[in-house]
Amino acid sequence: MQTQHKNRMAWLIGMALAGCLVSSMAAANGTSASDSSMPTVSNKLLLTGGVTQVEGSAGGGLTPWAVIGGYGTGDEIGANAFITHVSLPDYHLDEVGAMVGLYNRVEVSFAQQRFNTEQVGAALGLGQGFTFQQNIVGVKVRLFGDVVLDQDSWLPQVSIGAQHKQNDQAAVLRFIGAKSDQGTDYYVNATKLFLSQSLLVNATLRFTKANQIGILGFGGDRNNSYKPEFEGSVAYLLNRNLAIGAEYRQKPNNLGIAKEDDWYDAFVAWAPTKHVSLTLAYADLGNIVIKDRQRGLYASVQVGF
Amino acid sequence: MFKYSMHAAVIATAMMFAQSAIAQDAAPMPQQSAAMAASALRDPALKPVFDEFGGKPGLVALMNDFMDNLMADTRTRPYFADSDREHIKVELVDQFCVILDGPCTYSGKDMEKVHRSLGINRAAFNALVEDLQKAMDKNDIPFRAQNKLLAKLAPMHKVVITK
Image: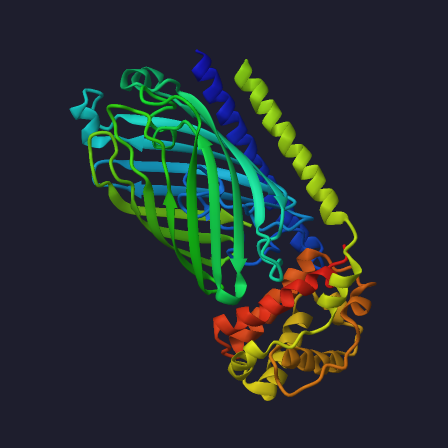
């Protein structure tokens, strides 16, 4: 009952965010139509807001960056909606979400993940295509620094954030040894653009109890405390619209019956305009429950301004 | 219950940091760094980039396209419409030429003085960067060379963006 209530809350937040997105877009269109001298959105430089990472925050594919999502500058509000699909040998993940970036200072995001266990669900007696659903509400605050402009110092842009996650399969999670069906990750990250080298570097330190980012619950028989985990990304800018890069995400290993591996990916992000970006990645997600070597294609489309 | 109070504490801490960061952003910049950013600093390491820009004739061609873009862009046009654009182009050629270690001298006005009263915000500054990028693309300047110049220009935001 409580879980249902929380899911409803998460949906409400999601709908509110989507509402913000639509109304800000309408406002943006109104602005450009009536007062073309000074539009109020879309003024960050291309790709400098990152894309949407797997938990709905602005970043690479796997890791959040210190950037605030959307193309709004300090005087503006930006927003994005995204859809992501990850296809693995024995599972697939479908995801939708939206985020709002406020004045290049605060980012609020919502994402819903649906992790489909395909044949593995049948093998484990859960039923073929058994699906874990997880709602994630994220908040990120930029503390200091400017990822693009601070080219005469070593100072990166630094942000802190939290991702609150609610999984809908409490009974199954208990059965596999997870201690909770909900949890909150806290992170601090630093992102630096080395413009002379056309290179962007990000480092994130995340404090988490999440098993497989929360899809298998939080905490476990092997460990039930917050552990610091390192995440890193590098991206090389090929031109204004195109970046290639690689990411690493260290993960806890809390469950005795389901070994968990660190994640890696190599990606291409293409933004033909500020209103749309496409990210393709080859991701190595290692062992997931009873299936090893889960490597496959990560595809994400983002629309916004 | 504990968890919720922890969330509240984290959010409160985040807000506090954000407040102080905002205060930091708004603090006046030290005089010294303003002067540093104001002058175009010659960097001998960028001589090969000067060649990639096509030398001084390349910079002249670039600046013609750049100014055309600025005037066509509704976000930047108001800042240039009533100014001596031919003079600005000459100044910009000299300034970029000096930064890229070309055989020029920059005798132009102090960047801080020029921009002080213009009320340029980040959106307008970024719009100008986009217009410059488009002009560099049109002039077939390699992307890496473009970024080497932009990395030298970026610190000027301290004296250009005043609101």
